[in-house]
Length: 226
Image (cartoon, rainbow, N blue to C red; front, side, top):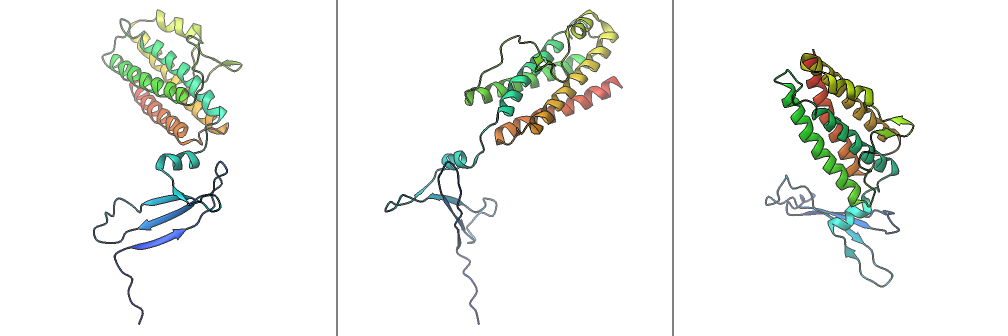
């Protein structure tokens, strides 16, 4: 009668040929099924790089594994980050107009939330570019993309109309223009993926955060407008 497997340790070895920067690696997966093992920790993974003929292999560090497995950023990612910084900067121009013009108790609070979230995202977008040696957009490169305005961006006429409005008229126009502006940011995220960007994990994470933040604020503003 076959003897039951020991509950101490089950070890499986999976040899995988991974072509990344010309390096072949083997992945050894070890799972500890002993009662002391933490079920929430998951199986530890070792990634081993075979040595040259006659040389010993070595285990790669987590950072080395990340560099091997992570796809590089694409030109579409850089373009998205640069343009989204400029896009967010215009949102700050809009929120700066609220003080002294709004007749609502809620819109100044909304504007403050937008201001905080947009500033946080601008810092994140800038850091992404700096970390990859990409150029930051020029200050006041105002809002022009390839062949025209970026999606959702306001032109000088829109900004002048908002600056000239007061009271309830300002509140209505502010919400309408900011909804349009946020919807443009969602369009830019879609354009990123359509252009082949968002494959790099950090770029994809930024795009998803922009989508989540803008979508929540759009729904909030639509409720206020209604």
